[in-house]
Image 1 (spheres, rainbow, N blue to C red):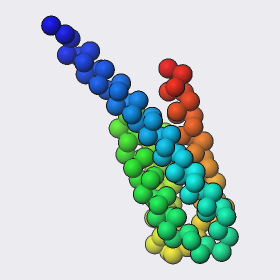
Image 2: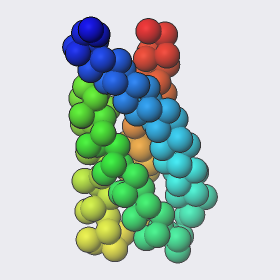
Image 3: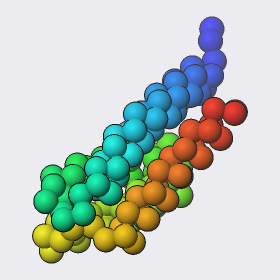
Amino acid sequence: MSDPSKSYQDQLRLLRLAFLESCVSRGQLIEAVYKQLQQDPDGSASVALVQNLCHETHKLTGAAGSFGFQPLSDMARQVEQRCTILLTRHAAPEASDLTLVDKLLQQIREVVHIAGDQ
């Protein structure tokens, strides 16, 4: 008879790998939005872009926390909260907002790189 805890650990490992793969694609989406925001100096497209960023960071916040990547979850939450403020105020992102998104992207890369080494 097989060990149920081994099966559980295998399933958890597969879910964690799926999460890491989703981090790569989610990071690419966030990076695309980040680049578009950088190229939108007058803020004309910023509302839709910030909504998209808010949606992606919200998903990342929950998933990262569920899989034990709390620092990534915390950083994603900061970006999500900042996006919510921008949407409430109907304001375009400032340089400090873009810096926060850049930090999140760096953290995504670090998590994927470190996990890939394991």
